[in-house]
Image 1 (cartoon, rainbow, N blue to C red):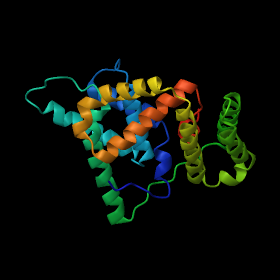
Image 2: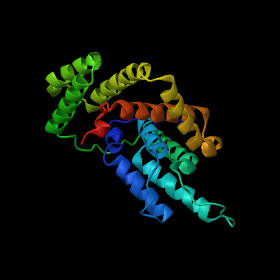
Image 3: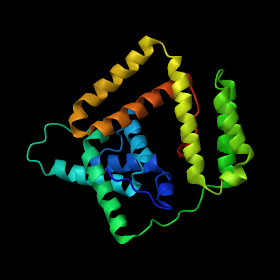
Image 4: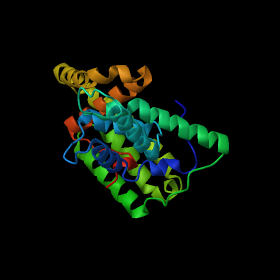
Length: 232
């Protein structure tokens, strides 16, 4: 899939991305009581990490439900975002092609407040110091915080650095999981993913599996999420 990459579009993927997707899916499904599963949350994160704009996700959800409603026989309700995967990918591809052909760039959104970024990095560093064995992750986070005025000039690069540290943190955490716990996580993933495997490409499945298992590992050890995407 062609990824959307331009000067400002990445920020659009951060502003209420989770909330917007969840609420839009609920409206399309016609049930505001529906709660997304861990697999759904991992899928949203994988879309964000792939650079898929929020607008493409929302359009894809609408297109998937329109197709579902047009069926004469509806054997079951749509209970997962995985059902919308191909429609989302199609919309993202169309948007990327439009930008490539027109040379248009997304409008730049206002940056995150400096103080909010500082607070986020400070909380992350504190949590990593409290989690024994993650000093090699805490130190570069503290270094980024110490020179935040410089890094604040390029938030996209800052987030890339934080995401790289998350990957390193995940690798450390996985070595501390017992074989049984990791097996249970993979088994849970397979049970949730099995009905939708045929709707996704191998690359999509690989990304989703990694995102899902990483989230499980972070939750298991109560590790902070470093990316600006999780800034509160």
